[in-house]
Length: 199
Image (cartoon, rainbow, N blue to C red):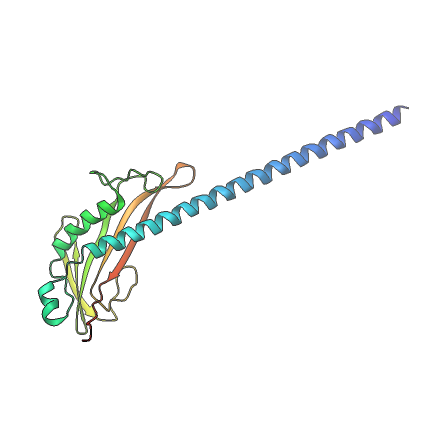
């Protein structure tokens, strides 16, 4: 009699242990799936932010591409003669395109969680096989000029310069996992290509 009672107690303990193990395993899988889902949502959010920033940069670069109309009318050459004026227009366009306030912060905190800063702005002019580049600093003045060979010289993002264009890069903080803020960089090269219409 005593042996049978002890055997029943052992079986009850095994059932309880088995139930607890199933509960722990289920909790582990639930936590793992929750973390994976959160990571996927965060990556999708970053991807959306990246595409939004790329579109805003492209539009701002194009807005600042002030082509010399007289030169274009005479020779059909696309030339951006005033890099400093182009930079001033770029800043206005970027602020409008990203909907930034006076402190250069975005009202949509889900995309950008702090101040946007222009990290680089370069104007490229191409004449025959030469590229003339002008980098504008944060103060709005040209701080560096250099030249290179068309089809060989590259922009900071690796794009090969074959046409006149503008490269710009911005930095901005984004909210990461568990409230961690990371600095993101986004750069974009936009070519200005003019084609002569045949009459």
